[in-house]
Length: 99
Image (cartoon, rainbow, N blue to C red; front, top):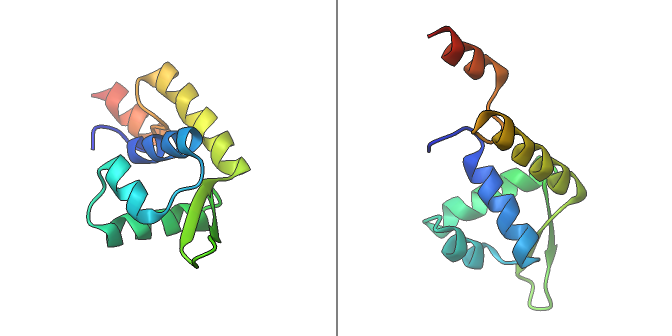
């Protein structure tokens, strides 16, 4: 991956554009394979509070961006504008500058 938090940025942007989606649909749209890995990543973002999860009428999970996810997406975009990388940790930036 080219930059720290790049997948997170792409994922949160996808949910902002798409609204609620199931893990299989996320896998296809984000090109994130296999579905088990995509599902694990969505659960991780849910645990971090960046996504919300609920069940549809058939009992399948639907994921959607949360308020905290929208705030994080805004921050990641700002970092991308400032540094050229989404959410690059300060320690990594300091290491790059000292090289």
